[in-house]
Image 1: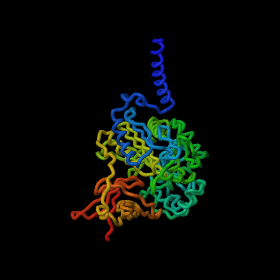
Image 2: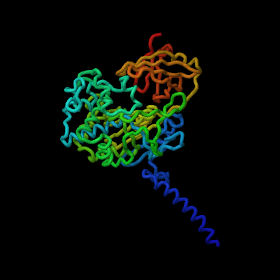
Image 3: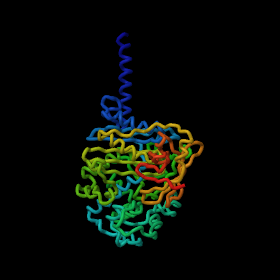
Image 4: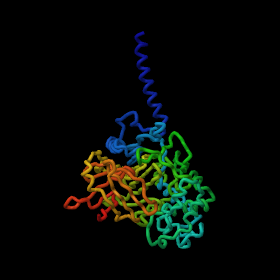
Length: 469
């Protein structure tokens, strides 16, 4: 009897241990540190604390993946994938990744180039006629944002049809007759139009639907088991819903299928993006020579579908992508020399993913990142001097913002020429001069002159000057 009384507790302990380990075994992305904290990377706590700071402020929910030198620093979900059904984000959650999709369209084009089915010197006119300068716009110019084509997302017809399911050709027709912005190859202008057309060229040359081409030639060889083309009608347990912060938290209305064709219409997990980086690096998708061409800084720190830039101190180049979709933002960084990959996927509808990725990059390089700042309450008279109209000085398009006080809180209303007035969003204060706006999630620091008068502000590198009163 005594023997049996000892066996029973031991069996319970063993059973509990097996239950915990079996639960983790069901997760294909499980890490040893999940059940043994001593096996976690030395930087895990710092990275987790950095992200948790944004979660606690209500400005981030999503999944984060950080790996360096083959060792996982952090791979974890935060907050909810579905606020209504209380489904939490975890490693298996899929997110809309926005313009990160451009990397995939670029690689599809480069594969067809390697197969000698097209040339980078081929012109748009050869495949899709009827565009201004179509006989001068090369595939290279479209890949590097030098086409000069009108930007489809700046056209009223695009905004009017973004919730209507149109074919790729119907979207192309929306922009076909629009006036060119500049002669091909003479300037740089970010272009969703170019990647819409490049994706259609992939279909025409391969005689395969774009989504089928990606599944067979990119996702499958890269072992991206959860990646696919966005379907706004799909509701699945591991598919995150995107949320916007306006007057409270509301679910973002997704664009109709094909609205972001070729340039922003994919969904995947954070680990999928890491596997994408591995497949590119080890030659499963394109040759080393083509990889180098893709990651060359052709113009304005841009390669083929991906950003290319040195770090602030001029040390190893890093490659980066970012994207936005209603209710989502995303970012992926790759530092080749240190074998570092950082992926941040956010379903809280602001642009925190990019800023958080850079902070994690600082942490991985042994630098001290800027952690999320606590919110403070300021008397209204302290905020009153900020009120006024401001104009951007270093953006490619004229952008203005009116800052005003409503119910004691600072609010901003931005106006952009292609989209008109954007929804009003609130700022939260961290000090007398430091704020975070709650839509994009950008950190804003106001500048003052020697008399204490506000002269402008810096919003994550975008400089705004206060208009004369």
